[in-house]
Length: 77
Figure 1 (tube, rainbow, N blue to C red):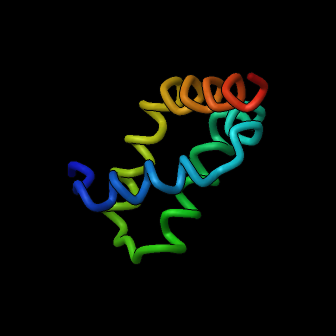
Figure 2 (figure 1 turned 135 degrees about the horizontal axis):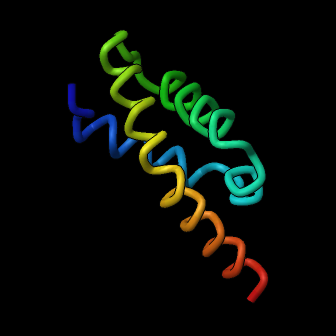
């Protein structure tokens, strides 16, 4: 199952709300779990959506970390 556009938008909004230091410092598994929990707190996900979003987040951990690192650099500058 693919992740719906509305869930993707919520996922990236939650990612932007998260502290960049947390996104960089956490292990991959904890990072995915944290973001999945935060999305689930905002919108009700069924089992298939949870699995699809877990897969999506797992596949995009590097991108999430890259974005968080760039936010950290911007904060310093």
